[in-house]
Length: 237
Image (cartoon, rainbow, N blue to C red; front, side, top):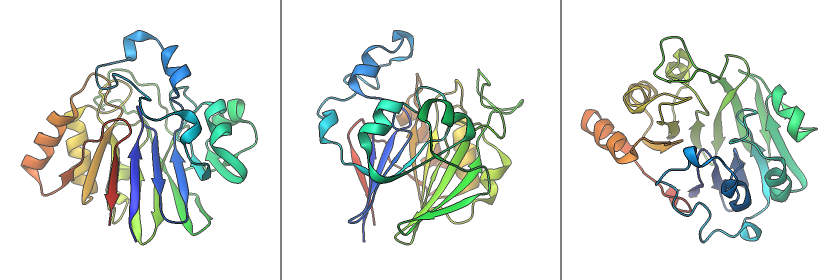
């Protein structure tokens, strides 16, 4: 059975099967994006929600939040995507804005509706390539999501960290490449080689060019890089 992976701006994804709808880091909606500081809006997002009216997004069975920063969680968006039995998972600091959610910490495993979610650390390091180090170890999650016999890793905001070498078999890795608050293109290439997933989808571009990332990684490996624009979907089979 196929899994669809749909990209929204920044680090927001929808993962969907025939039976399940899951969102990761739903924050960016048109009204919010219009009010976001212009210095972080780049040409990669010319019309952030063009063709994706808010009311057309399916309700979620599961929502995962990697951390508490405003570009990764927004209460109004989470509420709009939730139905009565939606499970929202996040970190302890997410509770301040989102209220009552399921809090999990690194190495916790949670299962809901046939989906297994394992929390993994996500953080900046002293030696990492990020020009701004604001993600502290223990405060942010990345997630390995297992469904339909596949494993998808969403790295959150992070540098290349040792935990990436211990993920096990990953089919798709969703990795930041922006270089500010996260690893840059070159470090993301190193991370990709260590994770060794079949497919990498770059996210959190900021000023970085995802096509440059694609060229560098594919020249060094057989890993397939799929660059998605806002609203585009990749079908994982």
